[in-house]
Image 1 (cartoon, rainbow, N blue to C red):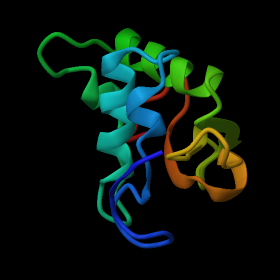
Image 2: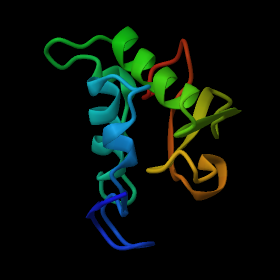
Image 3: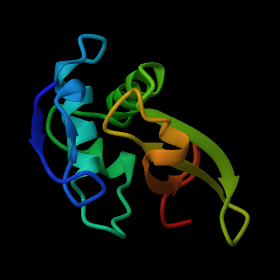
Length: 118
């Protein structure tokens, strides 16, 4: 595999090009993964907001996340926020060989049926 950018354990994608070449993933799912992996530390992406972009919907973003999960790049853990609202804790890894639950980049967003601001 060829390195694309970033250092091992450093900022950036820091992986080989496996994610970009994975035929199990649609091009939009790959793009979403790269977008999320390159967000600055502490970023709190909201899939519902991403779904408001032209040509996308909340359902399409959810479908891309499902693709990433099925291919082993993403793990999900449902949970509860400080005020008891449903949240989803997600870990996204740049390589399917990495165990996303341990090595992936963590994100949290509102769980199904709740707004991010709840």
